Amino acid sequence: MDEVDPMEDVDDVDELSDIDELGPVDWIVIEFPGSRFNGQIAPALDDLVERGLVRVLDLLVLKKDSDGFLEAFELADLDDSELGELRSYEAELAMLLSEEDVIAIAAAVEPGSSAAVLVWENSWAAPFASAVRRSGGQLVASGRIPVQALLAVIEADEDAESPSDDAESPLTTKPSGA
Image (tube, rainbow, N blue to C red; front, side, top):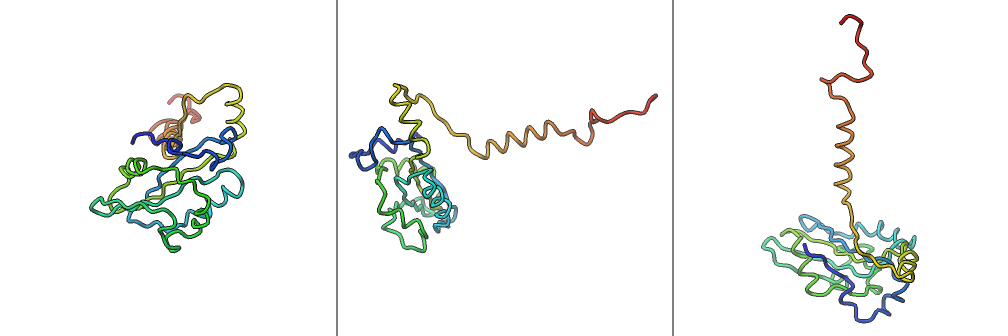
């Protein structure tokens, strides 16, 4: 999927705050196969917001039927049974995603699924990001390592380090003369 820049459609930076104090902005798409989105992610997200680690900038829900027809919903379009406590973010959203962004993001969602699209500011990193900008630095690369990839590497390392049943352990002693 092409990189979507959620900041490209911001017309009024004042809505977000002083740009110099803005932390890095990330976005994710969380798919719920079978369209089982129900807002149960809200408590974990609330915890991050309350601790000042993130600030929710945009949040929308996508629903793709089994034929691939897509519907995008802002929080105001959904009832509380679908949103749970996510409704509390409705008044604070900056609506950063354009129609083109949503179409590009929707390509990753499987038919018969729903997805939450979340754009957030990493508030915890704002002082560092501001210092970088004030010092004349600029971000030239960034990345994220999926948890599944980390787990696979850890598992592979553990498998490589543990002796197999057929192999002799280096700690095993052989009787003399054997």
